[in-house]
Figure 1 (cartoon, rainbow, N blue to C red):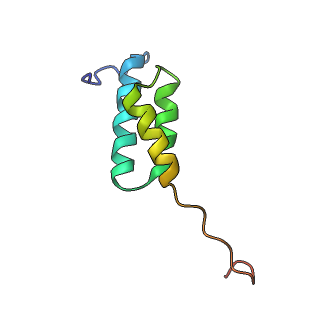
Figure 2 (cartoon, rainbow, N blue to C red):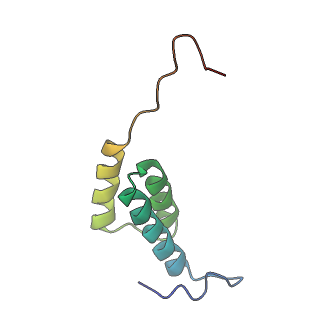
Figure 3 (cartoon, helix red, strand yellow):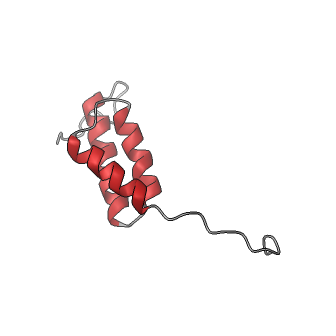
Length: 78
């Protein structure tokens, strides 16, 4: 893990961007917000190949996501 020293600079280090995204993915997954965790994994994957650990987490999080709540047969309530 890096120190994230360059994130506030005009040219952040891409490894630091990935590290921050992976940390946020883990944070959101601990809160069971798997959809957001997967979004963070996608950010990290734009800058590096995901490790086996994170590829496994991705599969687990995808299977743990809750489907959207179905709408009431009467339509949305106001």
